[in-house]
Amino acid sequence: MTRADELRRRREQEALRIRTALNRQRGEQRANTKGGEGTVAFVEERKCIGCDQCTIVCDDDAIELYHLAMMSPLMSVDSNRKAKIIRDACTGCRLCVLACPTDAITMIDR
Ligand code: SF4
Ligand code: SF4
Image (cartoon, rainbow, N blue to C red; front, side, top):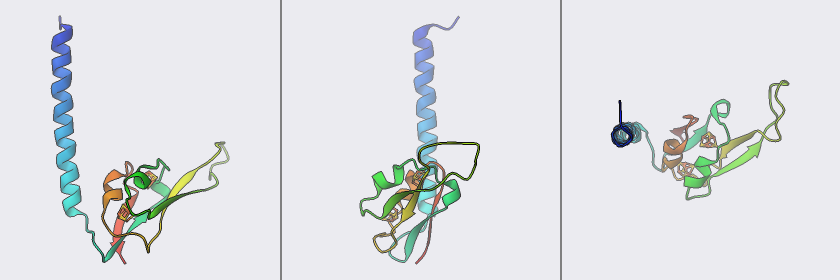
């Protein structure tokens, strides 16, 4: 039978493996994502879940959240938030792209 300390050790190893794989993936994603002054972030509304991660990482106050009515009449929630890019403030740094858990943000040409 597996002992508790053995199980904990295996869990730590697995957590390290997953973290390493995710970091590698993020590094590749960052390298492949264009950015800079000639680009601006764009939010695909359909994919945005209003989680607020992008506004936290954006140092340039270039993202704001707005409320949208739910499309489905079956669900009733107080607010359905979406992110919106303020184009003039966006510096093209790409941080929001990396922070978004649903891949709702892409970088487009200005
Ligand atoms: S690319 Fe950078 S400046 Fe532009 S919205 Fe994203 S985090 Fe903010
Ligand atoms: S991080 Fe992504 S899903 Fe979350 S609010 Fe920003 S755009 Fe929407």
